[in-house]
Image 1: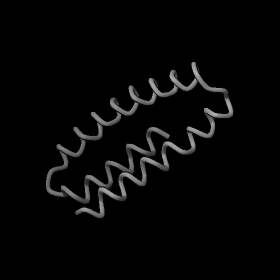
Image 2 (image 1 turned 45 degrees about the vertical axis):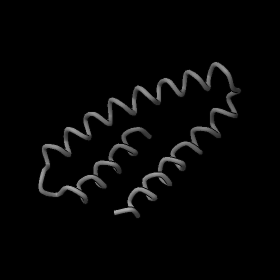
Image 3 (image 1 turned 45 degrees about the horizontal axis):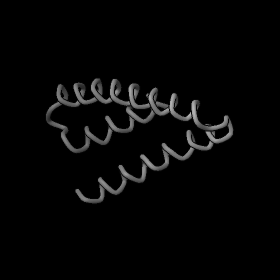
Image 4 (image 1 turned 90 degrees about the horizontal axis):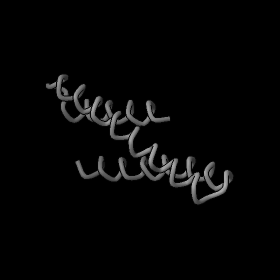
Length: 77
């Protein structure tokens, strides 16, 4: 799921900045690290304080929230 999200983000950045592929790859690398760290923290939080069923619901809702944020951001440009 992380690779899918970061891959979609990279495609969106390529549409915005097609003239600078090196910057796009740097963004991809940085976002992959960032998403891995944040995702690990979120998983630890949910495992500690919520049941397994809640964790499954959250893993379905969080990507949807992220896509809404990306779509709202894209509409601004």
